[in-house]
Length: 231
Figure 1: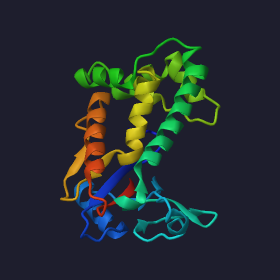
Figure 2: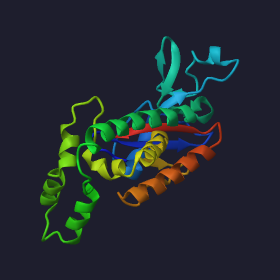
Figure 3: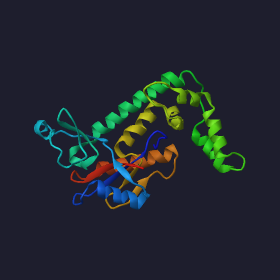
């Protein structure tokens, strides 16, 4: 989900015979989305049994790899066989679970349920002459639960525009974000097609994430991917 706190993440896929690098991925991003992008390290790196003690120190077949204590631990992309999708998804799930539990304890337990931003936006779009977008936003943010999220002082930033997802429950919230950890907000296939949600509704976003994760999981081990943060 695109958050008001962050940039859109686009995963670009290349087949095994293509050059996969920032320049090639940026060209596709410009062609399909008319925007620029910067590399973002989102994927955990796989270390194979037996040979893992050696390969963990080499960044071959990886894009923009980062290291900890000399070992390669994360990358913006690379060959699928070198990326650990399970650990990447698990890290996204852990972060989401901590964020949801913080919200549940500090916000949900002390405020009444509130209408999501999508409710107010739909009301504005159906009758813009009766409810301006500015007034719809004011009414949304005036709700006690939304105000509590905006005022939240903890380490976890709580985006009030994700309220509908928070209120759907921990399993739904975490399920959304482990998928998003793998593919982001959009995916460009190896044949140059753009996959993204048909609308901003949670249902359409889940449909996109399910399709994109299935596509990513079906790629050959020699295929390559690259994650970009779109401007």
